[in-house]
Image (cartoon, rainbow, N blue to C red; front, side, top):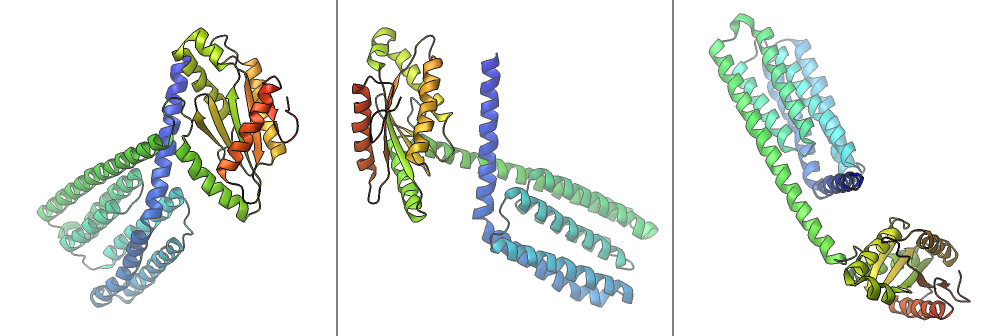
Length: 374
């Protein structure tokens, strides 16, 4: 029961992390479109000043419209600039700013609506319809869209009744309210389905990438992913003059485990070993299956002395924590550090040589540039 709950919690955490990655990906890839929408929204406020200046009868009403539209226009243009420069870094920050800007636009619409004497209900209903569609189309959290659109519709209908009173035709009001509600419902359904479809597509793409870079048995990375990580980290470490260590490990008694327990139990030992090792690594580290019961640990930003400490922790855990039942696993490590001009093959050959030196010295040790370290 506890294992099942732990597994469900792990699945939930993975789904949450994947959703965060999807949201961040949407923010990055839609940056140009979002900037364009923000610029258009800001310029529209200036365009809407023209009918306001023509049709608003009172001077204080025209002044109110001018000040509010210029303020909202400035906010949209500032948002467009910061988004274009990449200063909006997280999806959460983006959603908060977009929701505030949309709320400001709705509030401006309602305030200007009250300035007309009398306002034209049908024309203003068309404006509210456009606002609802824009709120639902622009990328944002679905709950933010739904709540803001619903509150905007309710506020508009309520203010229309208050402002127009007896001058409001009941049939026009009912028809306007009905069509606005239908538009809101259709936009909400469309936005939800579109978001779900795009997320499932991203999830499938992510799964394909994951399967193409992971060993199907153990869950460790495969050679392709190891080479990609090496190319990235070796270039980064050389550029910033950081150390990089690589360890090659082999299970000392794996043939005995295979003969005594069978292939399925031996495979389970490999899976458990990888899980134990990955639990001791940082996010930037990498565990890759090299072949059979051999694994490569890539440790960017790690000097050999620090790598020895990390490998010792793994050896201590293996000594006191049987992986499957009462099966105790012993491993030998070979450690190599990146030098100027070192290639991945160079480090693996050196680590392999030191690993077999550790095996000849009795195993369950770390082979370095001098004697094996226990």
